[in-house]
Length: 417
Ligand code: ZN
Ligand code: ZN
Image 1 (cartoon, rainbow, N blue to C red):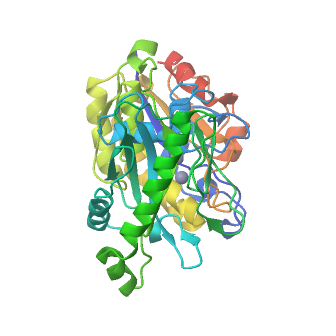
Image 2 (image 1 turned 135 degrees about the horizontal axis):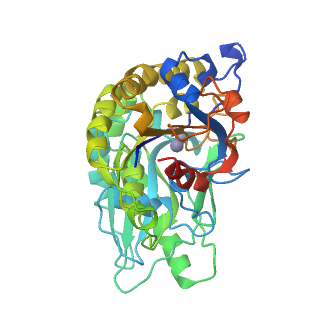
């Protein structure tokens, strides 16, 4: 059996951009190593979760690993809670949290509090949050993760909490347990969490979320960290936005059980760690988010021990959210030079299947995730080659693999081992 390297480039898919002479970042980037893999394989396009769904990363990654959870999802809150290693039981309520900035008119001027919150600022603010007292004897834990991100887990002994509640974060809708990015038009304001069904449990859960949110505002408003940030001209992290509630433990078969293969994975973000734990991949961190060479070396190491290595590379998503097409192009080039070059040179390409794709597109013109299909490349000695010379949206749309759904990618790729 050949080994497999499965790389998801977060948000790499894009649209032609005038700043890049009407090409996409993948087209504009110089990527000789990805192109070599494209020439040695076949390409296609993938709807990660389904046509017309602009997914969040969590549900998209589950799909790209072969799991169709779109109609019955346990929720990103649960995935991140598991990712940070918090103990979570059925009937607890878990939510994804963002530190954000509210102005005096009640407008959310930044959903990410300037995106420059340091680890120590987040941890100081979290200490104040964890002193809040909630009614109904509810206990909770707020854990800051990376930059403006965090998770909240609420527990009430003797009371089952319900995930059937709306987000307070206005940028995401909740559809069938899944977080779906909303197109942002006009000014954002905070929302109250509403019960989505008539049960007491949903009502109590929404009340607790709203109570936490109000008390968090009060705890953060005059906090010394925020006063210092404002004195430095930075945006205060003065509210918490919550989304993607979950209240039950995932109950799905692991990748080794379903496919009979042992995967290791390399990742950075808590949500990705949660996905890895749930699907039974052994998780490894290799350097920071942009240490692509370290990630390549770690991949080569892990390949000796495991049937496959899954690598989630966060890099291209953020410049997409910032609408910075030139930076996104540079990030793609850096990944090609520092990551793919090492793998291409140091693996036996005849005995290794490479799968390269994305969890979703993050077009610079939208500054957010879109429902556009993402390019897919599978290379290996058993793959029937097509005429693709490059790994781009346009080449892939004419590729031999055609169009497919995210859940079909891994089962197909495993056949080529
Ligand atoms: Zn993503
Ligand atoms: Zn994103």
